[in-house]
Image 1 (cartoon, rainbow, N blue to C red):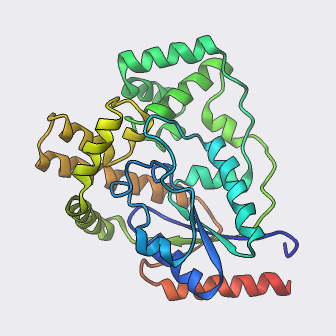
Image 2: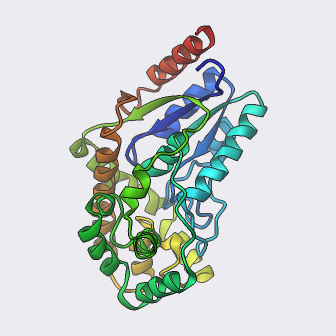
Length: 310
């Protein structure tokens, strides 16, 4: 292990203070934060997706945040390639890479490798996209629940990109995403420490509600309006994020603000529950309470020292 480059992964459900914990670690050792949240890659939604603010970014370098156009898709394979490049860049600078986020699938593929799914024939891809436009992602998700309930439980019914991807892979290969993800692959060449930030869902829920109110005070509605001017296609990948989808409906006049906030909180809570379920299946995470950042930093420093001495 000592011969492998060391990286730290700070994970957990949305709203549990992962960025603050990473910044505390960066105060103890030169480090850079690398995003592994599938929504925080979108440029037009820094408030709604809770990307690090200017003060947090000033504390240490941040990579892979807010670089993607709303209409551009982001896949796990693309993330893994970009993350490997970012990690190499940070290591070359003699800094500690700290991966921060809540998209468990991205992190798993980065650390454990991912299956090489064959190229999807164009006619199948086109057919799935036509169905997506005609029937919506919810129909594809309902079918996914039948053939691959495990994967379906991990993604939102409104997630056009992932539901379409699952449908085209199954149509082209006859194998589910769960099957592909469970096939043997080569782990990434890193020595890693996984730190989790977690509280109970009942404890987290009121905090999520307060965070939504803060986002609205910070200008989330104006952010959504500006993004809609740039990309009025509601099926664009960037709009599938929680908060983005609800505010899009508000901007379009389809729901009022009261309903927007209700849906936003309900969907955020459901997402946090799915994240908790995912991460509880991992057996190599050291868990901490949100805000216990000094303990996180101490744990990481001890782990780094053990790695050097081993």
